[in-house]
Length: 172
Image (cartoon, rainbow, N blue to C red; front, side, top):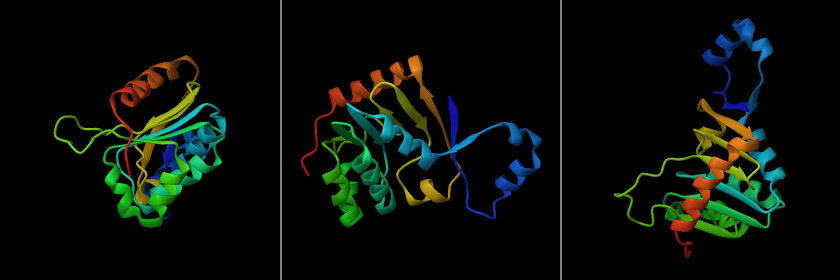
């Protein structure tokens, strides 16, 4: 497993604190953008991005991932698919890049709150963490997650499959 992070932009108090800690010389922090690209490159059958929130920057970010993966299925699971309309051309690009969009909220967000952030490459590797598909999540916020491979990914796949099976596709 690898720790995946988005660091706040420089100058950053966090970057200064990490630089002052000798332990940082012995650990690797994988940038979120690199982890997501890695997962997109691994997927062959299904590449899934499960995220509650998206803005224009995030829609372009996700579209780039879906456009570069070789996966046959390219699935976006989102809390409220109407967010894509607010992303203008970036949202339309994202819609074109996917093979299926699942609206987890389905218009009634009062019953269950969807806040999971998962990127899954087939059943072999996954990111589970805090990063949304938002401008601040890509370049400003401190976001953390784990990139996992091997048997631990099975539980992530089971959860994502359950979400995909209970929710219907979106008509945009």
